[in-house]
Structure formats: structure tokens, C-alpha cells
Image (cartoon, rainbow, N blue to C red):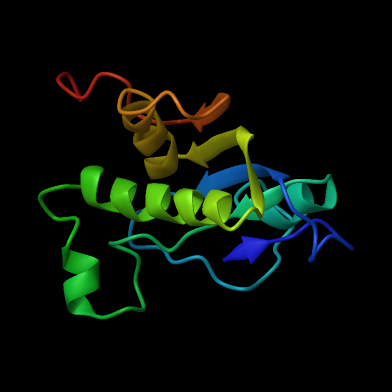
Amino acid sequence: MLHYPPGQFQSKNLSLLVLIHGDPTDPVLNQFLPNAFYWAIMAASEGWLVLDPNYRGSAGYGDQFLAEVRYKPFSRPGKDILSGVDQLIKDGIADSHRFTVGGYSYGGSFINWLITQTKRFNADLSGAGIVDHASA
């Protein structure tokens, strides 16, 4: 799901916020619930272009898509998310120098892994994610 800031649907080089949902099987839906887990629309209203992807492992795309994270819970969804970011930059929609990533629970754990794989994000917002996988 891609949320544009109000009135900026045709704009280019927008600041990008990538939100990674918690519970890898819990899909992003086109809905608004005013709580801490559904803040994509609120971030868009503050001027962010928000990519809220249903990466591999999200429900609603068939059993194979859901099962593809079983043994690679970060690297396979990571490919999906980074390819989405790359496409937004290639199309000139997102600014290649102004983007960040955020997530909570599984999303926080995912971010803790992702920032060890790439230095592309300017900032990261990680909530309630596992930091030390060896001791978890």
C-alpha cells in the first residue's frame, strides 16, 4: 500500500517512510484505525510518502506466498521491501536521499536486521523488536 501526502499525488522526490508491519502474516489493509499500529495515514498527513508493503509472508496472497518466510524470515521479505523502495526511487516518486524505515514487534525485529544489511536508510524507528537473536 502506498499513501501519498494530501494533495501530492503527482509530486516527485517525496520523503519516504517505509513501515514494516508486525506479525509477518498480518496483512496491511486499506483501513484507518486510530491507534499506534495504524499510523501510515497519520504520517502521510504530515508530508511523508508512506510505503506500507505486504511483503512475502503476509496473509491473503496464497499459501506459497505465506510460507516463503518459513526458513528465511528476514531476507525474503527484505528483497520485497527493498525492491519496492528501489522502484519508487527509479520512478522519481521518492527521494533517494530522504527515506527512513519504521516498524513494531516483528517489524521492529525486521528493522534491527535490515539496518545490518544496508546503510541506505537515513533513520530507523524500531519498537519492541528482538535485538539479540542468539539469546532470544
